[in-house]
Image (cartoon, rainbow, N blue to C red; front, side, top):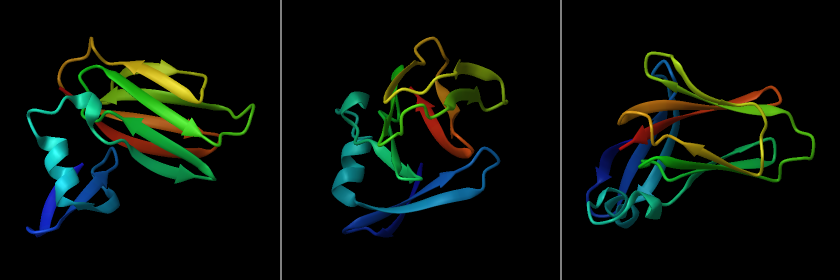
Length: 135
């Protein structure tokens, strides 16, 4: 997520982009929470999760940026819902693939190099993509 200042005193605007750099999400963030996200004294595990709603289900990703362990939580997911989670590097190489979705999915990026990765979550026919930063 990239941040642009709209009012130095109170807020920032965050933008999310898809795999081919199209802006897909914009959110306004209070300055106090942005300062906490980027403070060097705060560990990656204490960063506030980000979430998105798809067909009544809420997908929550945390922590992002990550030091290695990434959680993907899907709440209100109907039983027997099909889906998968994949992670790609910026060259499009498949890094991880999980064929079955759980309410809480734990992904291990500790063996991956520091950089930006694309997390793709497919639930039934809906797709959600996220940029993940590995420190």
